[in-house]
Image 1 (cartoon, rainbow, N blue to C red):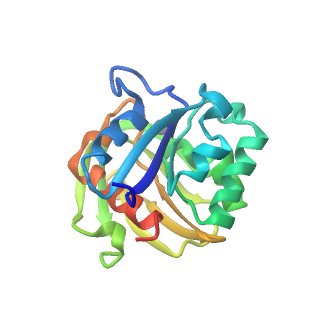
Image 2 (image 1 turned 90 degrees about the vertical axis):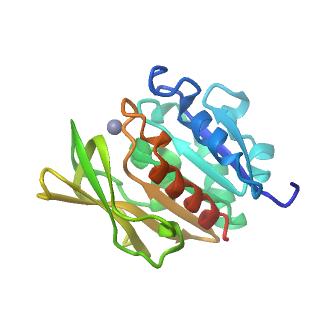
Length: 221
Ligand code: ZN
């Protein structure tokens, strides 16, 4: 389908194979390709031009990004290209979990993007829909991620246009903004915080629905 939303699903591919045999990006692309209005490809750090060549970005409506321990290997020219495509052309950027410290994401936000703390206790996370009228929340109701890592507020990012989801952790004592949206230049940015790489939550139906909605919203739909 030629007018389908073109998604480039990128990962540094350090997520463990037992959780994501084809990477987080492969898992998401496979899922997204089920939908007629979406055409998803994968890319990774080791690809030519780090998977984000001018041509690859020019053909992408939405870039999904998963980075964790290799943020520093992403070259300045890659970062600059991504930022230009978001700000000037309106490419959407969907950042997952530890992508909060990815350099292209930090360049888009313009802040440190640091959380107060990071606690991998593997305990349940209660995800609450706090902006039910937002398109990214369509068809999503509160749900529980059985095992997760939590990040603690404050989270140093610009004031978002909307907080779509909150995560409640440690018996509700820790409440984090787990789904946030901004417009940066002409582009839409969605950051989704859950998704520690050893807990394969990107196979969960609720999470997949959020990513699907997020892709469509980032594409301007
Ligand atoms: Zn993590």
